[in-house]
Image (cartoon, rainbow, N blue to C red; front, top):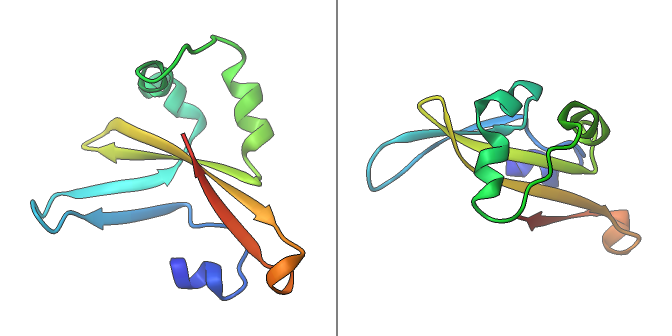
Length: 103
């Protein structure tokens, strides 16, 4: 998936399976889905900061096509972590793209 980003494809992957070398446990890293509102996504964020109860669906639609991509890590159906990949379109590096991880 990383090589796909480097080869010029602009959109990051929608889902990755990652296996822990220590425990052999497999986690799913995937893009946020609209249904995650009901899977505890806001409660997960509330562990870090104050979370407003605004219009989740509206915000989800606003960010669904980037340049920010919200990812969650799912373990046996439960959301256990989240982060945001922000893609910056550069004029430098041959008009390349640079990713920043937030949250």
